[in-house]
Image (tube, rainbow, N blue to C red):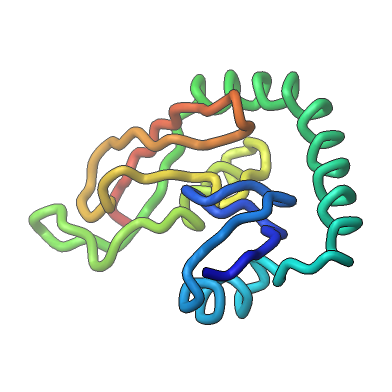
Length: 149
């Protein structure tokens, strides 16, 4: 088991500044090379407190903003166009990055693609509901309409 300090949010593991124990392979092959975590050491305690302080400052500021963003997202459906066959089946799938770009293109707020959660891969034309985690306590339900390009 490897002891790490998360530098970015990792779904199912923790938030920035959290100290976590993960298997060696997960740490060595995924978290550390992608910059999502750093190895834990006694000298890293200062880094932990700094990350937690910055995260806490952002959370206090963004709670009201997150509620406002949630209201604007839930009220406005987003349209994503993609190439599709005659049966309505897409050539590929709609990604979270495409959804985040569509929100911004529609005049909505800039959201991080990693905060968009799609329950089932979107591989056909139609209307879908996706979750957007805006804050630890606030998430929005976004309606995505997929149309043929």
